[in-house]
Image (cartoon, rainbow, N blue to C red; front, top):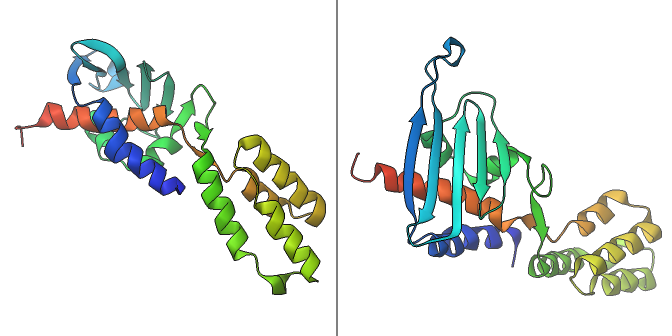
Length: 204
């Protein structure tokens, strides 16, 4: 499974299934503050009426989006004022790139063994014998890449590659090959889109 396959499956299958009974409710609060130029604070609740499982609340305030609830907490920031309509029209990579705080910091990612294995296989298959001084070096590289896919195993391989070659860029690529966007971040993204579609259904 590649990173893009993983993200696509989460967006098209996993989260739509989890959110299939969710209902969106939205409120806007207009503050008596000339500096806001009439821009309201928007609260959006996205949850099933029968349970709080995977319930999420969003607050949109000027250029900030705050998400909290069962999908953990995160803060996203843009360069100017945003709206629910604006957020619903974004692609995922752009949305995730605006994360400013999460349980894992600005880079809200997690390790995925299947993605790591796919990437290691790709890197191994791209390794060509004529790029190495001798067959022994070539075989060593191929063998070390044919390892397990846990984060600890891959970090070990990356260190082995760096110690052997001194190539920090290549070792860095290997070390992060299993990192994928956290599923909760994808849930925030899908929740925004599905909530907006539900709220605007029949109004266009």
